[in-house]
Length: 532
Image (cartoon, rainbow, N blue to C red):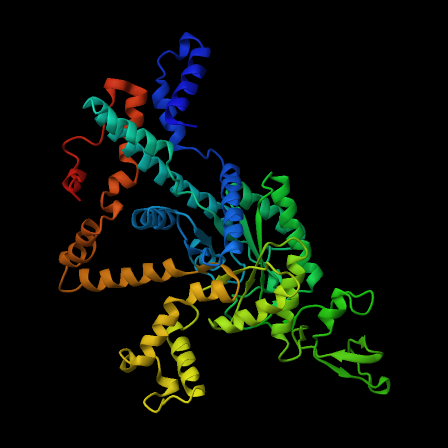
């Protein structure tokens, strides 16, 4: 709806209410409605789900159209990220947010910092989704408020051409509200618990839920040891629960990302139920590490399964967990992916131990033999040592090609001594193109970094503390923070404006007219940044 049409709509509503609403300004009301175009989280979920579906179709047509996101642990971080993207690229297209369960556990739990083991309050996840979108909607309101002020100035100056141009910009405004891929961990319980939490997350605005096939009460970070997976049917029940939640909430385009941790998980908590040879339970059990047993040698407490007419004893640990056969991780990953896509999932997530395009592609090729349009969300994880991994990949490629590598020690390639070498330069180029290469070769539709803003917050705080509490004192802040904010046009240098003071002034004027006591007058020190 255009700006003028919205004003006309508000004017009609106010007129129909009678004389008691006569003091309400329809243009002010229209502006407030435009500034809050997504009144509820469900409005957001429906809008962003359509964006994701369109992006998935675009990727299927051309893998150069892959998407990206960064993990954000606070609404302000998400807001500043999207403001930055609009400033530098002019559009938010193909850029999302990621909500990391790891960062919720480490930074947002009432228990304090926790490991990524689903010990944080499950309600903290939908609460963070709501917070992220509150800040993104505020970014819209702030930017549109500035446009309305510019429109008023153009009208007062009698510049009809500029006023019309600004109205067109308002009519074609691109929101900061983008899709969130939200981590529901292993569902925080059984399928019913997963369903209930999924509804809360969707209601808060999530259009995409990422769920993993670990045991919910044994869940570990994908880059830690000790991961325990569940039989396929247990996981598929949770995928169905998420789909039912989307459909019940009216978000038919909702996206489910099925994550498999099987590549690094060598344990299972239970033997799968099987009715007949070759069914899904039997396929899962076929990966168990078993020893054939002579009935004469049965000992107390042993558990048995039959395999090919033989009595087999799965290897059981003192923890009461069962081991998979070594070397079966990739096969289990492929089966996990296929069954997930066949039972309601839309995208896959394969948690790997290193960023290697061909390793990912090898598994995706096998999945695509069954499901040709299979697509991945891939974790460009800070748990990987990207520098060392890619330098070793180049080293190995050079060695295989017969190139002279005598100047390099493979175990020391992280050393600063190698930074200016040809090997390091080639490795950095491979890191730069990793996302495009993986999108084209390995079916990666969405690239994300799970924990980047955790690390950037730590790094920037360390740098500020070192300078401010050292000899540089106040200059450590002014030179490295404020001066750079001004010169790089960082919006929050005007922190009063970013926190909503100008919007508050607008509302005061809408509500009180000439009696409004505004904060943005001549004595507001934020005016010192007018030229920033």
